[in-house]
Image (cartoon, rainbow, N blue to C red):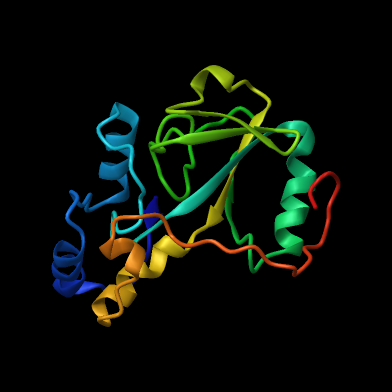
Length: 177
């Protein structure tokens, strides 16, 4: 989670305090520390208002160029915010001091298109050829909806954001379709 540069004022914090019963982490750094320590394992919707939230993809370097081209060719659904250098696990531009191997509440391990495992960190899977891709997430602007009195239902109910299947084809790149 990195900081969004925009004016939010006290209304954002007051609005979020009234819509979420769970503890609110006020900054991206606080939320990352809570995830890393195991104190937070829930959905991040509604957390760290005013900060950028990102989805994370970690790949071996051999697939990095194809995935980066895939994101660039499909910028609307996959807005690429930052790519780490091979072996580097800090998203230094968006989240200085971060550790993408440990700073999320949960990780899903996919192999050959199949979900294989869920775990709390991926440090033991990381090597010097891994690269992290941070992709934009709608959680980033949900606080603006709350301030406008349009709180998304999933925040009020403390659930994950709704997701939908689509028949809109993405532009393929290498193994990414």
